[in-house]
Image (tube, rainbow, N blue to C red; front, top):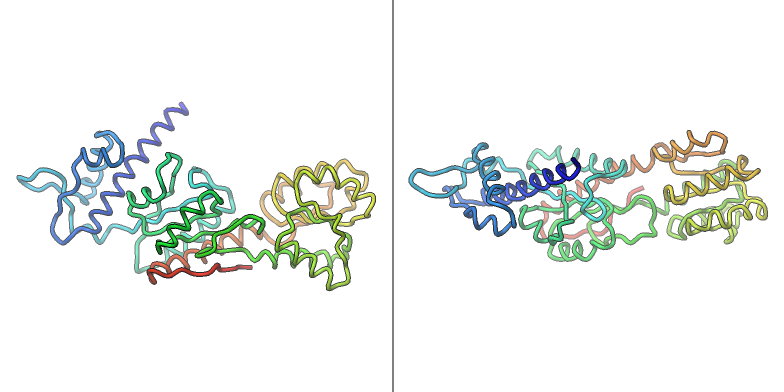
Length: 353
């Protein structure tokens, strides 16, 4: 059954690719009906069967986007429908070939779509990209006549293609990962989290709660540097031993830090790769309950708090990641609209708290 579902999904994707291409031809056609590429030409271009091409054409005939003319062979554009065709925008997450997204990416997409949908001057069609077939990103853009791309947390592997598109002044807007500034990000047309502010917020929370001997679980990034700086201004010198940069260091070093350095708190970035060993060590250590474990509030950390009621887990903020990603999505849409209104422009990163 699973294989059949995959096959059916592929049929739909192949048909949609042909449909999007034909719609782009109709949108850019003149005031008179124009002959569209023939079935065999479309089969060759998209490497699909004639059945798939005919399915695409018939769907557009049913919608009156394509017409047949008396005594003339082939399919023709319907000029009256050109103005009704929305402009396609590509949507992608991470590597660009996943069919599922997590909660934070969903919030970014929600914010983006809400802002784009409020634009009364233009109608948009959103196409979720799948580049797993080996087809180049540029071919996908051409075949779907995409007017731009919105990419949530793109992985470094896709950076070269996205940079080339930006250099050609093709509208590409991205949102960097919200979890850490340790990972590389694109240099232009991107929305970034204010990681330094995040580090300051963590330090302020510790100070307000009288916690002065913290362990920091995370990379020595911008957030960590501001964290140390804020503590230093309040007379607290962070012990370098208390930095556990790699997830694997938690089980190895944390037990001895609890005993030797008398730590009173732990701040951790990241996800399960750090949270799981933290829960394991603190649950199994006799002093684990007294140590404040500071995590950023999210659905994941709320679940950890429910699963480990005996630990002193404190959540900073109110669904901070989700709220940030939603606002970042809105900001990305504003930047995208700015790029559409000002062809040829590129913009420096937008840093958001």
